[in-house]
Every structure is written in structure tokens, then in C-alpha cells.
Image (cartoon, rainbow, N blue to C red; front, side):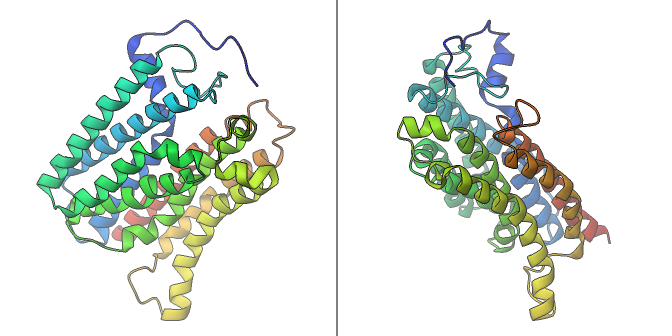
Length: 316
């Protein structure tokens, strides 16, 4: 997989930094904020505060960018990122140096944390614990990833904590609703990371990096990817129907029937599953290499359907 020619002529300053922070992955950080804010408006009984929403969204994206840069620095220094792919960052392409990437990450972490502290000041100290945990996970993400805890890190940061934080910003109260209902979307964020780590099993193993994909191996990773991909939809069905069957629909975890809209994403999920099944003989050369990017697109589709379900329930 290695290549000696990973450097290419750099584009303009703005473009190379946009590539460096990997904006194709932003749906993973944007979706939980949109989801938690929508839940707060529809089920938390509050009027959305636009300024607080925008600050939350910007802070989340900035911290996501910082974590991406820091992760790229460690991966590059460990010799894990040496091959240019369509979604490679600017570091492996030689567009920026590790020093520049490290300084960029520090600036973004500081800026994102500052916005978080501003939100704490404007809302409630409860947010400090949620945001503080999120920043700590972001700073330690690479270490967690190298010791098979990266999946847990993204499950928390780009799923549960993101959704709960957005809820708290708007309502200033704690609730289990944004945590439980965010689990399906959180699983898909894990699927994005797993697709990346699955592709990199050989290089990670060579460098003695232990990801969940390395522990599971190729066949185990296929099964795990399927659980993440289809388990998210299964959880939606469970939260829609099981409380109605066993508890007559009582309780605040019962999802409205409008969440069955998520079934519209099933054809896309099947398409991704076929890519995974044909990973050794892909129909298109990059099908498996960019499975993480394709899974990110699916996460955006699935999350958008969840948002539509929330607001459709409101208007109905």
C-alpha cells in the first residue's frame, strides 16, 4: 500500500486547510447538534434560541476539526498515513507540515473551548461537565483509538454528548431523551470510523496499533459493520414499537411513528453492505477504500430522516 510519491503541488492556503480538517466528516458533528436542538424544541417545550444554536454548531465543528488535525499528526508520525486517497488530508499530501497541523489543532481546540465556555456562561454550569468531557475525549482520541477505544470515543462525542449538549443549551436541564434517541445515529458515526479502521487493518497491525477492527479481523469487522449499519435501524423500530407493545406507549422514550421514515434509508444501507461484501473484489476500484466517506453520507441521510420525523410529528 505504501508509496514514495505522496506529495503533490499544494493548492491555495484556504483550500489546503479545508482539506486538512476533512469537512466530508462534518455530518458526524453537525447531526447531533441539529438532533438535540430539534428534540428540545419539539419535546422539551422550548423556543429555539438561534444565537445559542449557532454557537453550539460552530463550537462542535471547530472541535471536530481540531480532533481531525491532531489525529492526522499522530497517524502520520506513526507511519500509518503514507498513501494518498481521495479523502486524504493535507498532511499526507505534503501540503502542510506536522508542526503547522499541531499548531492549527491547538488554535482550534482553544477557540472551540472558548465558545464552549461562553455557552456555559450563557446557559448552565451543567454544560461544563458535558463539554469538558467532550474536549477531553477529543484531546485523547488518538490514544483511545490506538487502544481499541476509538469507537467509544466517537460514540460519545459525535452521538450522545453532542445531542445531550445541544438539548442542555436550549432547555438548561438534563434529560435521558436526547441520550437514548441519539443511540441509532451514534452507531452510524462508529460505522464511519470502523470503515476507516477496517480498511487500515494491515497497516495498523504492522505498527502495533490496536483498533477494534484489528481485534476483530476481516470477517469479524464485516459482521460488526453490519451490526452498526442495520442495528441503527433496528433500534429505531424497537423504540417505536416495543414501548407500545409492552407499556401501551407510555413513557418518554417512545418514538413517534413518524420515525418509520428512516426505513427510506434502507436501500442505501443495503448498497453499503454490498460494498462491504465485495471488498476483496470491488465493483468499482475505490468502493472499499472510500467506504468511510460513503458511510458518512449515509449517516447524513439517516440523520436527516430522523430530523424530518421529529418535525413531522410536531406539525401532525
